[in-house]
Length: 258
Image 1 (cartoon, one colour):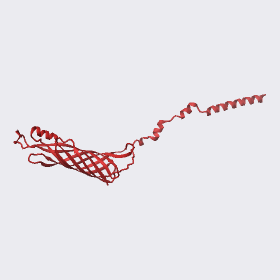
Image 2 (tube, rainbow, N blue to C red; image 1 turned 30 degrees about the horizontal axis):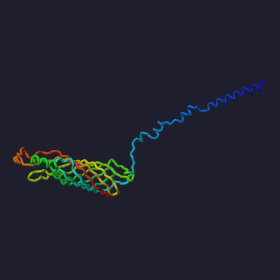
Image 3 (cartoon, one colour; image 1 turned 90 degrees about the vertical axis):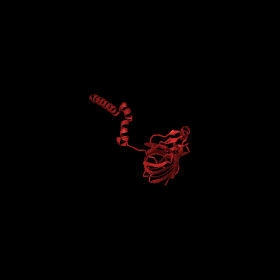
């Protein structure tokens, strides 16, 4: 009888111990759900660490400029000259050290004539206004190309183009209009240009330039003071000092890449 009681008590202890062990081994449902959550903070620390903040976009270039010379022939018009109209012809010779930086020599030659405003002034007042006439210029410029892109044209073709800035210094040649004959002058000048190139082969591209130049030019009266023109007496002094003149032109041309 004693043995039977002892056996029952032992079996009861064993059952209780097994149940406790099973409860300890079984994970809590809340803990299981918690382990399934994505730790965003750890992912950020792993993949977007501070050392990865500095990055650059890598883009395959079909038409490269590095270590290449180019020659551009272009033509265009001035559009902010208050006295003249006409056409401008230009030639650019340049070289790119890499895809971003280069330099170029630029020559411009102008074929100008009096515009409609001058003709109207002469018809109204019977005298010629005092003015200068742009003739030509030569510049040495540094070039920076920060933009390069590809564009789909009607889902038929990919157009490759870039956009850059040119900053230069050089010489600007002009004439002072005078009744007895124009005076040829030259002045130191600054240049700031924006251009865009559209490539259609390895060796050829269309280029569009918007150029601004600034120069300090001498100014003089067209007529000699003391003279009379159509009943109008010319007074004052002929030398009018100097002033800063801004010339703006829009050019389009063809570039050959060697």
